[in-house]
Length: 493
Ligand SMILES: Cc1cc2nc3c(=O)[nH]c(=O)nc-3n(C[C@H](O)[C@H](O)[C@H](O)COP(=O)(O)OP(=O)(O)OC[C@H]3O[C@@H](n4cnc5c(N)ncnc54)[C@H](O)[C@@H]3O)c2cc1C
Image 1 (cartoon, rainbow, N blue to C red):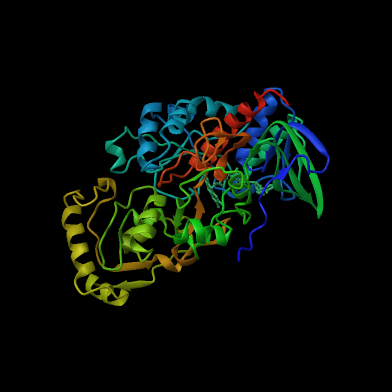
Image 2: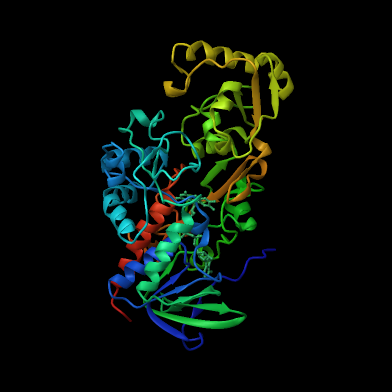
């Protein structure tokens, strides 16, 4: 028996008279909702923002604040990089695939410079300096970072350029991003109704015309003359939805503000909206990118399965979906010591030994398995080569005794987001509502549901299977803006 809240619509003839009326109603005040509200307001629409929490922010405010932008932004140029929308597009198509949304990726890349300007002119700060080592969130306030663009196989598909634009902040940058967007929302005089949970759509002859919400136990009814935009985030916190749609994520840690309950997605599903990529996820594997890139990532039988310099979320996906997260980081003392303590987030080796044979035995791998892998790795690394997975030679050197192993499933504690990664990873969902390029929610036949738009992690966005950091805040705000503009352009009813 399902314990899910009722999500079906209410017919407008049966709904209470409206407590509030507006042109565009935006549900959810994270980055996607803020961007949608700002754009709709800028085009002259009356807007109300609904938020279930006591204030705006959502997961966006908890995030690292990396935003995926490129095509030759001022920050890239200041750091000495040239870039094109075409190279950005080729990278994202490959790294977010297979079956990433090609049309949306093209729009996102072609619009990236303008989107940078939009963010920057609202006051989102980016510092023109490069952090040049794999990391989840760099310990400095450098404003630009690589997100796997210079790793194979991608480096051969598109000219690499770093595109991770980090909002300048002490620690994680999401709070600064949302503070700036919230200031813009205030300046635009957009009413924000907090502590208000949207529960059901109001349908007027097949068109979404508002929502029935609850505030402190009381029903509040909203009518929208032009459109309703869902920006309610993903469903990683809803165990039942995860079990139904993304069972492999069950039991793992969740990367969210705790409120990704998927109810917005279910409200739209109840109208016949299609969903896509529901099992795709960002897999924040609990390893330190700076450590693994200097060593080896191996499975339960001591074999490498990926080049360790790829964006760590792709290491996570490969480890979860192909190795069941039974993976170890193998490194030597030099590799460990090369990574400054503040970047190690408290991670220490779980096993250490003078020889690889002893380490293999301690970890419980088959005799000769890890020994063979290290021998092969070292033989080729001595020549600056990795003929198995083509790790960049910057990170290649033979590993020397003493050796150590880190059991990834033991987890780690990420600063600001607390303990992360039950069982070896912390995840958020990438799947969600099927939308067109202007955020129009599509039904199972691909036809827009009249009056309904969506953006951010409530949608399947630009993704196929893969994920690259910065794309969630990036595409959430980019397509949030498009949804806001599209809803504002609808003739009022
Ligand atoms: C620790 C951490 C680090 C991260 N780092 C990055 C990063 O560096 N770069 C990146 O791109 N992504 C990052 N992410 C992921 C990213 O933050 C999210 O995927 C993104 O913020 C989602 O934006 P959103 O606007 O769709 O949802 P949210 O920001 O979650 O906003 C949704 C809002 O809707 C509200 N809401 C939900 N349901 C209802 C309802 N029924 N009625 C009313 N309100 C409702 C919620 O309370 C919430 O405020 C990170 C996430 C975390 C937690």
